Length: 309
Image (cartoon, rainbow, N blue to C red; front, side, top):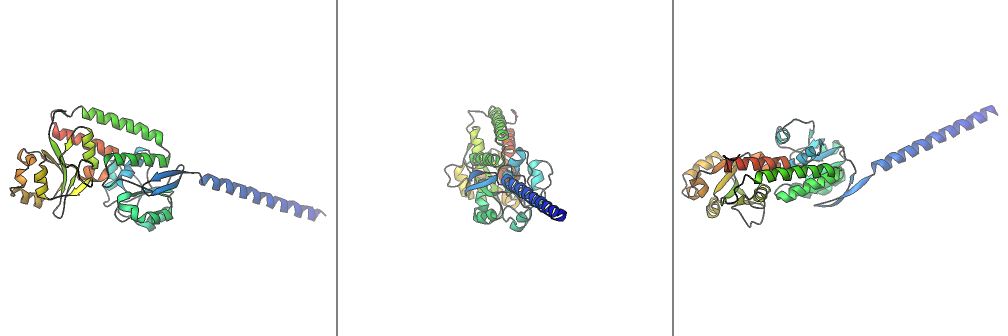
């Protein structure tokens, strides 16, 4: 009789433990399932309320996360010093291929709870990324300044940091307002941001990230009414637009030497007046974050108004 009682008690104890474990597992599962919907360029994705392991496939997204106090576990970059140059500090992360060709296998191995991809580069692999973990697709490359601000807001929403986002945007607006005071409202000069390579010439128009940003301060762009924010151009078109100032984000030395001997190049007002300036390529064409925007503004004003800066 005693043995039967002990056996029954042991069985009851085992059942109780199993039930407790099942309840604990269910509670844990319910906790991990807490999500919120984030609308983005490729649809709507249910994202964990406070994602901790994030993979960022574009530099502006890395910058946005840094502004919100978050370090991604995985980042796409082309050069070893891209991210340290972007953030002006070193952080610990795993490289997940390049921005053009992310490595899906490496991304999957990191077990992320959120992936942030670029509409221009990654919309074609959205379904593959979504199969790994929740993915949102936002605008960065070849997008406007306002579209990049919208992406920052979406990231803040995704990671649950909207209060911090609003504070940072207020600071950003304040800094731009201070910078705008240094711009002469009567200045009629029109600028052009160019990338001059031996195999291609591109210009950043009034709706590009830096173009729209500078327009916001009253610095007009010579390249207007373009189909895309960034457009492929020819030397003849530069002559036609005739910018008063040229900011060269990249310039092939051999090409420039050839242009110096070309009558067309020497017809351009910016060239005749000596207002062709070399600027930081990464800052003006690759980063597209809040900090980059503020640095672009500072550099532009220093070059345009050296006595006021």
